[in-house]
Length: 345
Ligand code: UD1
Image 1 (cartoon, rainbow, N blue to C red):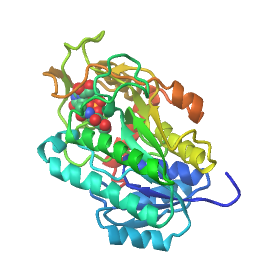
Image 2: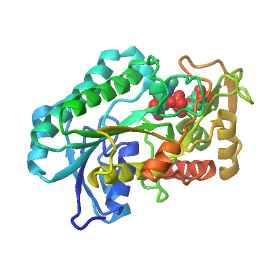
Image 3: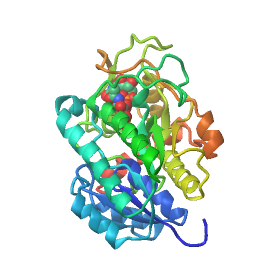
C-alpha cells in the first residue's frame, strides 16, 4: 500500500460481491465508503464487515437513481481515489418480465454516478461486468477478444450497454475504467460472516444446493442433461467470491498506480476450469458428507451449454490468479448457509 490510505467508494457494497470486496479493500489498507439502497441486502452486513476487519466501513443508504443524494456523498468525501461500481439488479428471469425496471435502475444509476464523478473529478472506476456479454462463445476458453453477442436478457443487455457508455465517456474525458467480466462467483468468506443472501427462491445453482442441503428446498432441479457436454449437464467456470474480490483490489491498484495501458481495459475473472452441474453437486456432497436429492428436469431457457474463461490476460496483466478450488468454494458456501440457519443475520 502506498503511504496515505486511499479512499474508495463501493456502490452495492452490502451485496454479495460488494461486501467481500469491501473486506479485501480494507484488509489491503483502503478506506471504504459504501453506498447501497439495500434493495437486495441488509445493513447488518456493514457490522459483519466490521467484525471481520475490525473497522466498519462508512455506509450511506442511498439509491444511485437519486442523483442529489449521491452528490451529497461525494461532497462529504472529497478525497475519493476511485469507485467500484457493483450496485445493479441481477436477476436474469425477472429482467425478462420487467425490462424497464432493469434498464431504468442499472443505466440511470451508472449515468448519475458518472455525472457526479465527473463533477467531483474522480476518474477511476472498476466496473462489475459479466461473462454474459459473450453469450455462447464460438470457441472456448473465452478470451476478452471474443465477440460480444446479442444479449439473452435485458439484464445482460444492461451490462453490454453499460460497457458502451463507459467506453464512450472514457474516450472523451479523463475517466479510466477497468471492466471485470465475472464468470460464476460462488462461496463465501472463510469467517462465514458474509455470503450470498438470496431473497426468495434462489435462481443460481449453489444457493439452491445449500438451501436443499439445509432442508429449505425438497430437491435440486438439474436443468437438462442432454447438452453437448461429457455428462450432458451445463458447464460453467465457478470462481470463489473471495478470489473475485481480490481481483478488484488489484484492479484498483493498477489504476491508481497508473499502470493501465489504455483508458478502458477488460478482464475475464474465472478459474479457467469448467465444471458441470453434476460435478458441482458431487463436490458439495463430498465436502458436506450429505447426499443431495436432485432430479433432472427440462432445460432452462436462455442457458448456454458451456462457458469457461481464458484467464491468461488477467493472470499476466493484472498479476492475479484464482487460488481456491471447487471444494473450498462449496465448503464455504455450506458454512455460510449453516450460519444463516443459526440466525447470524
Ligand atoms: C446466471 C446468469 C448470468 C448472471 C449470473 C449471476 C442466466 C442465463 N445467466 O449465470 O447472466 O451473470 O447468473 O449470478 O441466468 N442450474 C440448475 N439448477 C438450478 C440452478 C441452476 O441446474 O436450480 C444450472 C444452470 O442450468 C447452469 C448452472 O446450473 O448450467 C449455473 O446456473 P446459475 O447459477 O443460475 O448461473 P448462470 O446461469 O451460469
